[in-house]
Image 1 (cartoon, one colour):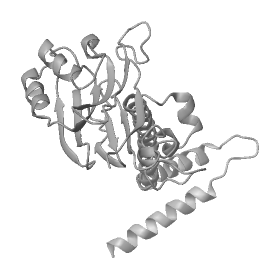
Image 2: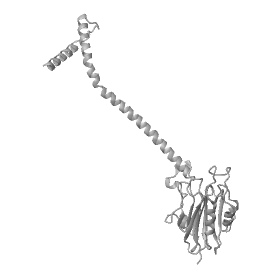
Image 3: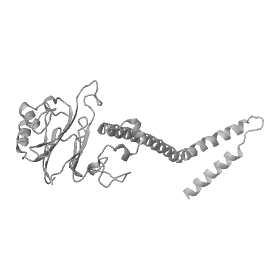
Image 4: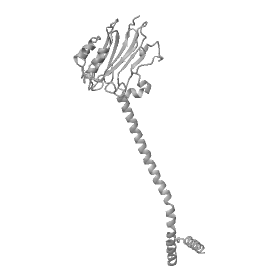
Length: 296
């Protein structure tokens, strides 16, 4: 009964509000003004419910604004991550620059890496990615020095990667691969830190090399700080003519042997000089390849 009366009262007040219309002259009689004021006040009371029901869409607009803010933050974060990855790539791969990075694909950007034996290109390729195969039965080698203090050295012999490239700064100093001259088999490998390592370990390794062994050496970062006269003499006996001049952060590659029959020697070096360095505190990476006669 009470609900019915309230509904009828609301309907009546709404009818009174509809009946009130402003005069065309813009003037209201006192009776109209008095009645309309009551109706408007009562209508205002009812309009509170209408206002409350419209809070929903306002909250929805706030969520939309939050969504736009989140999208903006996400785009900025993605941009920062992308720039960081590009800078990291340029840092870890000194052979890349911004200009050739844009012009080449990721595969092309790493073109300085050793090519695999099954790489297809114009003309026959040699093992370890040599431009031409070695004549007859000769051994094939290709070695790279390290680059800055990030990219490690590489030593490839007869198509086998004895020391693989590392981009985490591992194996700084002098890296050595020993191969049997007669069979071409890999005998041993050693990595010796010449910045804060022990030169005695290098000396012990050099003395352990057996006669008739081919020795391949590649440096990375600093190869000379801990190098003493005894170690330099042992390397000179393998055929090196530059070891006595090797200094802090020089890049140096060497292939020789200990009392080998062929007595071949290959050597290449580049000095560390801030005025000519490619990477500020480090000279550019060097590579060397060649063929070693095989003993029948």
